[in-house]
Figure (cartoon, rainbow, N blue to C red):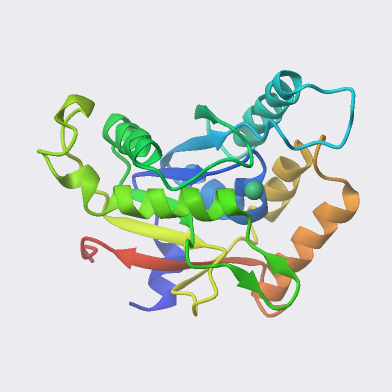
Length: 237
Ligand SMILES: [Zn+2]
């Protein structure tokens, strides 16, 4: 499968599953916007509402969660996404449990995405400077386990609805060589604007840094987002 095919690929529907508000905007919002512009229906699933994500004493867990859900909703709208499912797990306490896996099976059977975007659960260390957040790893593990095989097995959780086959899992924040370098030239501005909506989390410096990442990933030629892809079902050419 050439990267060119993956760059041009647009699914009919996709689900992005992440731990925190702003994970999508740091990661794959440029690709999401490219897909929605071409008619894909994309749903976001937020496992937590980031209710531990502040150093500011004026907030409680409840008020920061409400604010961050509003920020996420505004960011999604810029990327052409109007449907968000908030699962309200506790920020910083997500574990790869059967309960979470089941909740994600419920989401997939409800929305029936052709493609699921997740983080790479095997990413733990980035050089000597970053340990991947435990919530990210837990959500990613449950996501891939739900995608294959659980969601497609009719005898597993029949009460959650009809078995559904996710065709591809796209993982960003991966250390493996990527299968897709998606050119996001046309949506980079929207990605930055979406990131800016997370006012409780990001400042101008951070937005600049994420723009630089996108350019570095595209080797300074075009801004890109990269993904490792698992093809559960071979793509029809
Ligand atoms: Zn995060």
